[in-house]
Image (cartoon, rainbow over all chains, first blue to last red; front, side):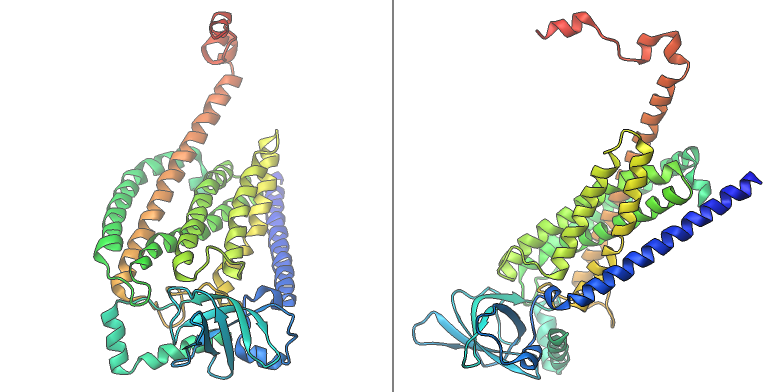
Length: 162
Length: 258
């Protein structure tokens, strides 16, 4: 009698904990979904295009791949311009300062700043975002030679749209 | 499962496991670290900086793994009142917190040269920091009560609520845009790390797990011994010869320092 009562109390505690976890998980999910715009670290060019025209005073971060061949140094020597793309939309970025070591054309980048009235993004800070691929140089060269590199680039662009 | 919750059974099992755990830990860490720091190739983008990964990633895995273990033990202590589950949860917390801190520190050291910043408040980094705070909160909470049972009840509840953070850490890089890269190993389509770099990573992860097992056993053993001493102090022995177990005030010793 007392043994079965102890057993049913244990079961009761198990269900109670399960229900409490479900409720807390649901609350967390609702909260995080509602505040999605503050949880994301940056907007992709596509998301930016959906929201335009942007308030020029609003500080925000944009992220994407640096388009191949788009990096240009302006005449003053310290300002660069480049295009950030997610393969669907592009944003022109201008930046004065030192670029991170990993800044490369074709690689990910996150820039913080604001849109100017001309639709150009003026960055105050530029961070490099590397992808999830790790390999020695020989393997990378082999992939480029065999033409599998494009799949990786496509995947990277897709990750940026998220 | 409940069979192993008996301290005597656990102690016997732990003694059998211990030499294996030590052997595996020493071997995998020695070979793993040699491969990671010397023999494995540099990354095509990141160069030799990639070697931080071999500590950073296994430490992150262990931070999450220990937390899940701690929460499961917390649930077992709440539901079935197993004293050993409570001891295991308390013993796991500082180990998990250390791994999480190691992950955050190595990540920061890695972020500076590669991303160009020590820290950003993106979803992955922030949720990992919350994981560290959950560990610290748990440790503070279980020791905040005079009655240890109330402490472990409150701590277990915190550990269980905090387990919601574990999938958030894991999937933060998929659910939201982050500066942190997406998953490289546990991902759809298999690992995106070259095998020559993946092996050292796995070896060190096994070594870290072995290290966790060793420290866990030592800490549980210590706690069981302490409880035994306390029980002896409270039982008859104390009445027969109080000086033998109970610390007595010794005027000569106390005066010696003055």
